[in-house]
Each structure stands twice: as C-alpha cells, then as structure tokens.
Image: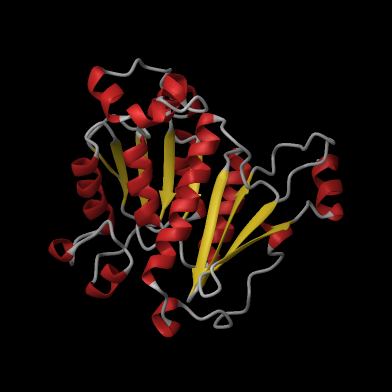
Length: 275
C-alpha cells in the first residue's frame, strides 16, 4: 500500500462532513446548483472513501469522474503496469506512463485533475486477504475488474463487510452494470439479492474469452465506467434510485439499453434468515 496520508483506520474513522473551501465551492458549482445534490451532497462526496478495483478500461473513467466529482478519498487496487495496448481504452493513462504501475499512473492523473482528492494505492491484485486488510477503511466498493474470480471475491467481501458494491462488465460491444446491497431488505422485508443470485456459478475456465483474445471497443468501457461512477455518486449522495436488484444492459451496436430485474433466491433467503 502506498499513501502519502495517514492510513484509513476503519468505518469509525471516516471523517465527519467538512465545510467546502471557496476554491471547492467554485470547482463544484455545477453540482451545488442541483437541488438533488447541493452543498450537503457535495460535502458527502468530499467525506466519501471509495475503493476502486482495477485501474483499467472500466476503472479509468470511474476514477476520473469520481475525482472530478470531488470524492475525497479514492483507493485503487491493481498490480498491473501500463502497456501500449491499454491506451486504446484505459484513458487515465497515456504514452508517457507506459511501463509504470497503473496505480501510480492513475494517481498522478488524479492529482492533475483534482488536487483535493486523496489517493491510496494498493499495488496488489484484489483478493479475500486484501479485502480483510483494507475494506474497513472504505464505505463503498466499485469493481472494475476483468475476470470472474475477482468479481466473486469482491461481491463476497463487500457483502461480509456490509458495503455497497457497484459492479460492471464489458465484452466486445456490450456491457452491464448493477448495484449490490444484499445486507439490506426491501420495503417488503425481503433481503436484496447477492451477486450469486444473478450469476450462481463462475463459468468454466476459458468459456468466456478475455478482450486480449476477442477485442473490445474502447469507447464501450467509457460508457459502462461512467454509468458505474454515476451509480456511486447516487449512493454517496442519496440521490435517485440505484440499480439494486436491476441489471442494466447496454448493446452498443444497437444503441439500446435494457433492464432485467432479479431477486434473492428463496433458498438463500431462508439460509440468511436462519443465520
């Protein structure tokens, strides 16, 4: 972990709302003008601590838009380095950062974009072990990883820590986004669904090809990553209706959005209530 500030110490240490400086008020004026956000919402963004898993195709726009929005602390978990083939879609990096750690490249880009944002770098692949060590310092997780192992690990870890999770995925010309809060109940008293209610089992190895084998249109990661950043802003500020129990699907070739509703499976509901 690399951090030029004191390390986070858990949910109890999350800073109370701090007043916005005159420079911040000017920077975020277009947010503050929105009745749904206002000064109070901007203060919530400033106090928020968000962990972003992956600084690649999805992580790039997520980090850029959350930094621009004024999220006070951004954690970045990634063990990869910038390569030339990344630059077609991972727009937080550039030709001058090829060979650098993605966490380092992204941190410098964020500092140039918004010096008010604190960045905590975790130069490691997200795992159950890293989740146990780090999640207590955050109040929201965003999974921009590119593999099912990490997606299941992130979902399990966020559920155990009772943290909301924004998760998304892309493939060639299509993508999806959903929000998970399985530790909360609906108005009917039914637990919200988990990641495994949506995807019960990981697909067999090799069944879902990676973008290095099939390709992916670069702008698609911008569409999905920006939607994920928007869901995070809604969760932080309490604005709108997050995609809990809804999977948003995007078909880039048809320029079409669809939404699929999903629920907690009865067996998992019974097991959770019994425990």
